[in-house]
Length: 265
Image: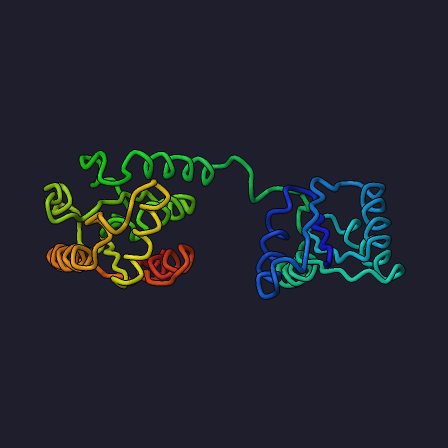
C-alpha cells in the first residue's frame, strides 16, 4: 500500500484530482490518499514532512507560496521523500513569460466571484428544468438535452451546470409528445443523446432491481420497447435538427467535453 499525502494551502481539490487520475491506472487497493488542507505555515509543513518520512509516503502538493514550495523541495530532498510540486513549475514559467510575480494568494480560483454565482444560478436552473419540468423556461437554456430514459441526461445536465451553463433536459417517450416550447428552441442549442440498445437494457434492468422490481416482467427493460423508444427519439431529434451524441460506454465528463467542443464553449 502506497500512501500519498495531498498537501495544499487551500482545499487540495486540484492535487487530489491529479492523484486520482494517476492512481486510477493502478489497482484501487494499492494506494491511500491522506489529505492535509490549509497548510499555510512552515511548522505545519514540517510536521507533514516528518510524518511522510516515517510512513514512506509520496507528497503531491499545490502550494502557491514560494517559501513553502522551497521548504518542501529542500526538506523532501534531504529526507529522500518523493514529491510532486504541481503549481511551482507552472507559476515559474508564467512569471518568466509575463514579467511579474504571481500573487501567491491561496484559493483565488474558488473565490465567490461572478463566475461562482453564475454556476449557482445554472445549477438551480438545471434542477428546475430536470426531466421535462418547466418547459416555459427552455428558451432561457444554453443547452437542451433530449433523449430516452436512462440515457444520462440528468447527470450530464448537472455536470454542465457546474461549468456555468444553463441546461435543461427533456425525456423523449413515444406516448408523450414533446412540448411545443421545445420546437421553438434553435436546433443548434439542442443536443440529442443516443445509446446502444443492449447497454441501455442492462442499465434499465439494474435500475429496476434497485427499485425492487423484476426486470423480466417490466416493459421498461424489454429489448423491443427500448428499440422502439430509440427509433422515436431519433425521429424527434432529426425533426429538431439537433446534433446527436452517442453516450455508450462514455463517462459524463467525456460526453460533456464533446458537447462543449461542438458548441465552441
